[in-house]
Image (cartoon, rainbow, N blue to C red; front, side):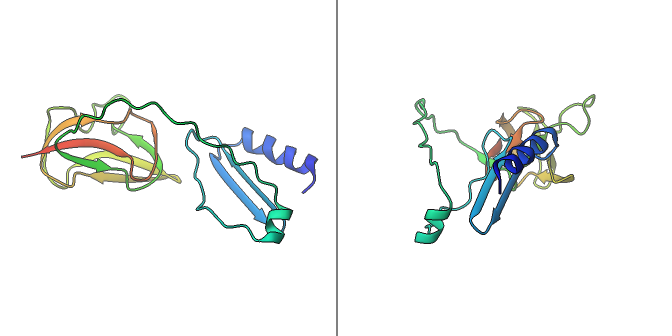
Length: 152
């Protein structure tokens, strides 16, 4: 791809609703993302010809300061997919669950929107909501903790 073609592609990507895009063709690879935490393909071992054809700039991740971890009791319900989490059925309505609320196994606790599909996330256990770990309309990653339930 020519530089002007890449620049046009990036401009169109930035003005679109698309959140993430990856293109790989013979001798060319580009990954564009508007997400805070973008999808990272599994590490690939480049072949000598691929290494010569595709320049790579690998930025090392800076260590993140961590606070002492307090071990919390309860079952953590995690996101089964990447998407936008909705803690409320509609903006004017109350949240599906709140801290201190009792839930039964199978109760809807939130919705995750992925690729224009709304998926109900249900409680895996019965108990009391002890912690909500995400904000409404937050982009969540696969396996990201959403809520903590203290089993009854």
